Length: 201
Ligand code: GRF
Image (tube, rainbow, N blue to C red; front, side, top):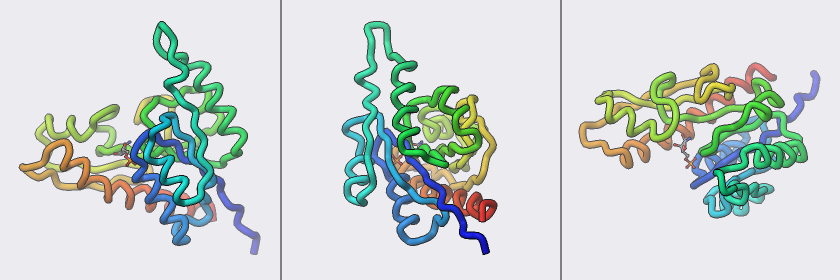
């Protein structure tokens, strides 16, 4: 039998990092084979994900987006150039976005066609963009959920790999709903990767 090639994955995260941690733990438990998380790239120096990377012994690279600020705003071109350099030096087969709060530019997306995944806290195509849980509450929805999808140039618009739903409680606030959704996000990301893994092996 041919040896299955390990799939090098880099996680991009901007914040707390609970999805990153869940993926790392699943990988360490042997649940994500053949995916291997070989690095974290963060755009925020204070991201909790960076501390987690240290804890789990995963290489952590900072491409600090705040240092690309210009008097006119944000130099996206230079930032993305640097990010792509870092990605290329890690040689990933896959990129997993896990709470990466910037929109990934078309140049990077084109370098990794159908190789970038994202987790989004809504039942896409509903509530793309920021604060999806708030959008679901404001719409008066009774059910929300999360989606893992391929990243394309359309924001939160790529093909969906897996979705799971969750009942919204009458007492829910944006905070409680986001918190209750998180464990489902972790599970959905893991299972979406397992679906892809099946196709690879
Ligand atoms: C999650 O809700 C994820 O769906 C969204 O940003 C949040 C990140 O949380 N894209 P964490 O940093 O993984 O804890």
